[in-house]
Length: 338
Ligand SMILES: [Zn+2]
Image 1 (cartoon, protein in one colour):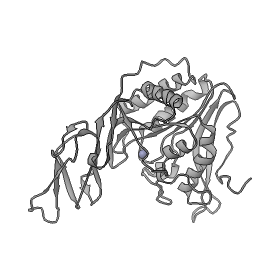
Image 2 (image 1 turned 180 degrees about the vertical axis):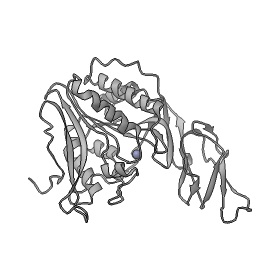
Image 3 (image 1 turned 45 degrees about the vertical axis):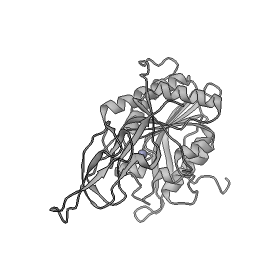
């Protein structure tokens, strides 16, 4: 073993054909368990090398987002009887300590997995997970789908997040997958130099990467879950992994783009926020977004907060209590696919 090889071990043999379940053993030596590890569950269905692409499906990158993990746990129920081509690697809760704790970040090290790539072999547990994804999982994958939602602090309109590759041929397949997923909304994302996310890691490895936000407030919404499940089926069918999938045709997706600072609404002061909008509204520049009350001086007039640009409200804060710098809303403008 080279010194750069991950310290996370598994009994899963990714090259073996057939269906396997098991865990990734994340070493975690602590007061209650000196030689302990955190078992991160996964399932692999492999039709054999050369039969088709490897698709890596992950949820629980953040621990308080549930539609993805539920969709993947449901998929696992069918995997033993599925006939596929290629290989499916399914991990419903990638940051498992965070998922079991029901929080965005890990209770062990406060690690936000999606800001810790490429991770570290000898790092904190969350960094070790990122390092395993970077060194063991991404190299094996052709297509990666990482399922998110807004978490406890956000409600997100169901949206696939797409960062289309520049190269023409890969871009054509990528946009095909986006249309096949058929989310009501597709937000075209620019990585903007952020290289700590799983999206950036997948890009480094030259893999096709899709992620998405499907709900929020740390709940599991039935309609958003259906969007995820149907979208996954159609993408897997398009990739030839489950060529016989019987899934309704994709509905046309609406393409949107977040255009910088003007699309974000932030709290400038601490307080209690009264919104003047709801998810999905079309907002206009200068329009009242809401009022911020000072609970220590409730008799004082609230501070009016205005939208700084035009756009559809795609994401809203679920918690009325705010501190300076908290994001209250995120807008996006309709755009063409290119
Ligand atoms: Zn997330």
